[in-house]
Image 1: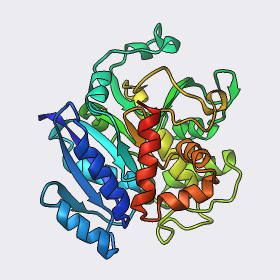
Image 2: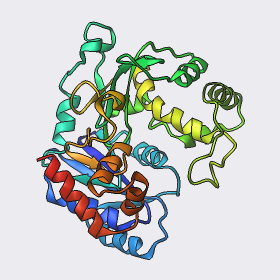
Image 3: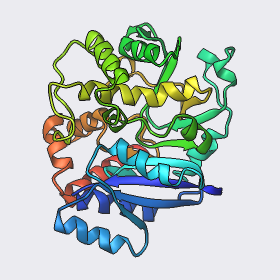
Image 4: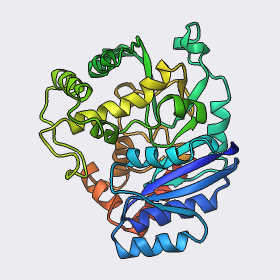
Length: 327
């Protein structure tokens, strides 16, 4: 097993985003050895394909099926799960803006840090298996720090798996570092494709029933909608998979911690601050888009269009705002 990180970035049909990421990667020292895989979800744009061909002379480029990003994280990491001590996951709308961006994650995962909420509990004695850039404080299924925050759908889903938690910490999957042991115990990265593979089984039908009871809104499906169409349960299963990546490691006795602090709750700490982006910024997070929208005097919706319009000049302006803020 290599004492280094396998870093996986997923991309598709946006050469400006990918080049912006690569530029930032090459400008900053990681501070810890890593191997990068660029996992391309079957791009069709000629400019993007040309860039991938150019990058393949320096980095490993893998072509994957066009599916959800988390599914690609799972399929690529599964190929190498025995080979690396750590695994790091990123989207292509990512900017590295400080040196030692990977070292701080590795240091955190080996730090033994423990939040006050769990310091005197059995959970506090679990090893750290996962570090998330964006993360919440510990919460139960109905509240967090006195704020109503419901996740009863998770409790009900866990009951089907005969698993039980009283509290847990939610950590975003993007820009997360996992130990090999935690990733293997988790069964890889949970994603909607894992539920697609058991479609129409008894387990699948029970999960859909529980989710529809707790989440009483029409299911709009998720992209690509030829695989995950509306009026099924894919949007809700996608949400469940996001929470499973925080809950299942804890059930297997691995803790999730944040890169810094004890947790951030938007309802308390504001929705439009670029928190959790101290070393590596993910332009696509809702609160980052809101923050950038304020800076550009535009709406979050218009800002999103600009971010994904293959406009390298606009991305450069975003880079400056972010690096200036985190100096």
